[in-house]
Length: 208
Image (cartoon, rainbow, N blue to C red):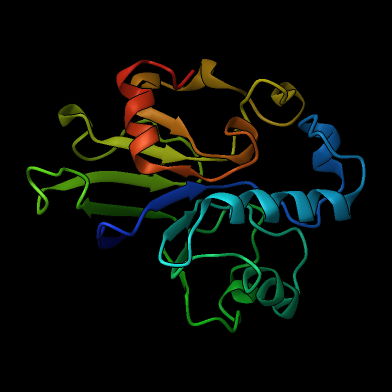
């Protein structure tokens, strides 16, 4: 299990996303995505990423990034996406050997269960580190959940448009919905979501 420490400067944000499924035509039907052409979907996801993610920002992708297996295609797509560091946690549809051949110095392949500590979120306590448990699949249990540590995940394709019963079960099987958040694109307007927004949603019980 990887342990990653991230410190956010005043000009840096930390974003989370998953389940882009670049190159996967059927996902448009499975999840009722608002595109009818695979090239339009690929470009639409790219545009929405670049609309919010800045050049200095950090992004965690929690699995199922690409449907294709060619490392050069993966590299070409990632090089069109903003961000200073991109961490990829592989999902069940990802080809890990192919991911490891990506030629982009910003990209880091991390373990399928990763703990990240993010500091710089509190103006009054800039060194305070917030702990998060990252995974592709939503977890049944994890370290420090009793202290309020959130599990950020993907896989279930939840969201207002997604017909997730076609693909995978929804939140009815999640044991700790008050501590889990689906960062997948189908649940977040096909756009990465910033860590502060996740925290605010969880405080306001907007994760379901």
